[in-house]
Each structure stands twice: as C-alpha cells, then as structure tokens.
Image (cartoon, rainbow, N blue to C red):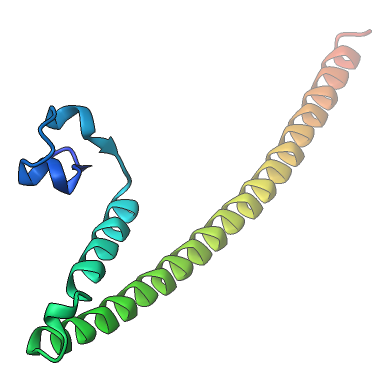
Length: 126
C-alpha cells in the first residue's frame, strides 16, 4: 500500500519481482483492496504450518469478527441510503408544493394586475 491507496503486488513489495514497483501498481477501491488483502491473509493463515496453533484460532475469530463488521457496515449503508431516499423524496414533495404555491401566487398577482389595469382604464374614461 502507498499513500494514494494503491495496491502493490506482494512480490514487488518483498523485492522478489525484480521489476519496477510503480509499473505493477493498480488503482483499486478501498473495498477491492480490502477484499484482496483478506484473500491473501486467508491463504497465508490457512497454510498447514499454522494448523493446530494459537494463530489458527485467532485468525478464525478474526475472520468471524471481520465478517460481522462487514455485515454491520452493509446494514448501516443500507439504512443511510434509505434515509437519503426519504430525504430526497421529502425534498421533491416540498419543492412540488412550493412550485404549486408559487404558481398560484403568480396567478393571483396577474389577476390583481388585470383588475388594477381595468380600473385604471375605466377611471381614465376608456
């Protein structure tokens, strides 16, 4: 990882790739990058050398906790999206009511202008 949220191939980071590090960088979203690292960690921690060790138990608990955190984040995102949709809906309804009221008030003004002009015309002997 570098500061611009780029993912680097693990071979290049370790220095075994032999190539230019910047040429192997691929832009990824934070979610894609996290999923990529998760898969790498699962592969590494699933190695037979870690079987029946405390690390295996810790990693299993970590994956469960991470899964729950992702579910919780997804639920929160859904709730926020629903709240945003409600706000947008309320805004559109309020704007429609405002525009209807504005149209009504403009019609009233035009009617008053016509009445005023009619009276002015009739008062001037027209």
